[in-house]
Figure (tube, rainbow, N blue to C red):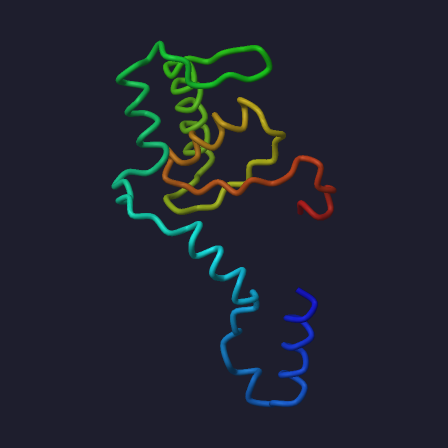
Length: 138
């Protein structure tokens, strides 16, 4: 990482036109190859989004276990209902399709329900660490 940073600084310092060029790939070739191999997939991408697949499963098997956390279990029906109540709250607060909604929570069932609810509202969730200092969060 430092070599890439150093090389970029050298280029910017010695080649004035470099400021107008797109950033080069900063990863070493071996890391680029590894990433390409890991991300290669022959499987087709689903036509639906995560929340659509979740709610489809909730309709198919409402009593099946969807989430296990802290020795508690939530069925698909329970988690779907919880998420849809949050969807309504997000929409009541004026969220529009494509809006980014921060989710400032610790990992757990509440975070899962919040993310599903935000997606169902057509918005995008942005997970934010709950331990971020308030000044940085603002």
